[in-house]
Image 1: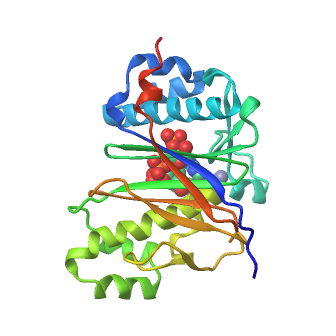
Image 2: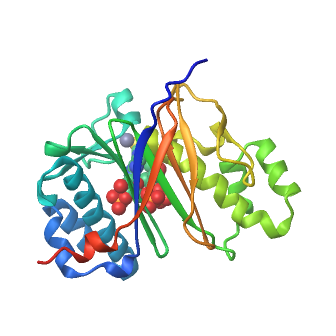
Image 3: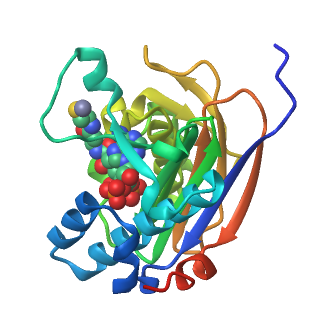
Length: 251
Ligand SMILES: CC(C)(COP(=O)(O)OP(=O)(O)OC[C@H]1O[C@@H](n2cnc3c(N)ncnc32)[C@H](O)[C@@H]1OP(=O)(O)O)[C@@H](O)C(=O)NCCC(=O)NCCS
Ligand SMILES: [Zn+2]
């Protein structure tokens, strides 16, 4: 099969949640401010504020508008296919208003916030804090195929937890790109072993996209992160530090 060779540009912005401050709330919309206020744990609140302010700023810069003018509509392909109209909007945030045509994904975990943006190509980003204390035994069947479980066992105990999160981040990035989220089934996707370059080997679902690109992202020793885009073209991934964008917000 011939693949188009023009790379798809994908910008990934990283920020620590410590950059959260009240001024960022001014760029959020009312719904986001309400949701921000509902978080009881300060760390969750800060990750949310940084992620949503950053998503607005990068979409606004790409669209040539103010961050406050960016709109996000939430899209759940599962409910759309089943004709369900749940009261509370949920699912993948899709840029709208002046930012219509952009695609965006948000992820936050521990001390990391990531926002990925492309023009017109559905994208998913996922970052996972490698929690050595978390019991992953109960998640193995849920997240991995039989072959992946065998590969993880063969890699040795010292690589087990980080390897598991590599699988998880890759698969969740894919499911965030399609918008299905975890309900799409992590174990329906088969990806390469953690030490190998990220790629999709099989995707056993009627919702599997015809083309997909997958890449690992460097997020620091205690994190695993991945980026997925629904395209046949190679990815041109540009990674940025978002601190200057966030500290420039003066309200
Ligand atoms: C939503 C979900 C992908 C979040 O994953 P997570 O590892 O807990 O969190 P992350 O930080 O990586 O990602 C969270 C972000 O993903 C985005 N998101 C939410 N749903 C999404 C979806 N279906 N597809 C893509 N992105 C989604 C949101 O922007 C969210 O950030 P926000 O809450 O600050 O706005 C995951 O919890 C999930 O799939 N849950 C089940 C969803 C489900 O059941 N959907 C069917 C409903 S009918
Ligand atoms: Zn739904």
